[in-house]
Length: 277
Image 1: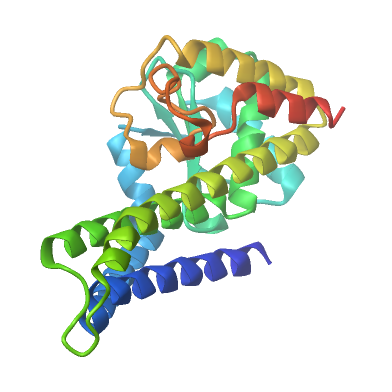
Image 2: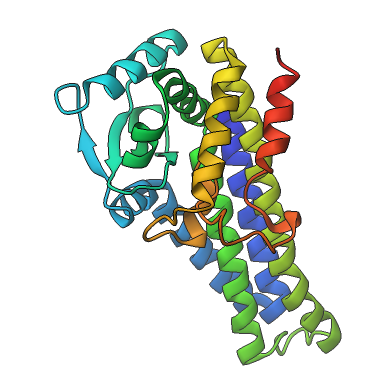
């Protein structure tokens, strides 16, 4: 069922993208948008995980090189009947983690060295459970595709500004075209952020139920949030910020409105977890 929902979202965002292309540049715009959407979705589906792991210089580890981490993940995957994901450690002092991959058989969990040094074993288990919850509900793919399409819509709006809207068969209203060029990228970004924030709440709840101890994740989130404010994450970029358990820009984005945040506030997440006790 979760995989079906993922495909529905992919199709819906793609159709929105194609419709926007038609409004900006008529039939030629729809064709361009269709080709771009197809190519971007194909790339996002098959290669986004490899790209993001490479971007953060993630190092693959196994039972021999990271026995403690491997043991935690193995225990949780057995409990949830998930295949063992590939494990990576990111050589960075900011405590953080993310999951990526297109399905259960091609999933990966990456944690930073800072996370392993800062959190105690129970808190690490809670963070891993959060990431496995993302995997279980295909959140990695949903987040990747929504971010890809949101970026593509913004790019198409720039294309429309450069070449003008409409076509010879159906000239467009210039005011409508300009409004769409401004509002559609904004709306796509809001949708992307809303999807990301909702999925974080769901993964928090999934982690609490997986471990049976909501307080472990509460404690871990407090530490992650506190240290992320003072320790920047190397190579962090907005395109992948939604993937992390804590926004890697936490210490830099305090002035941004919550509407455009990729994550709920840590306090909101802790309060939701408190209600599960």
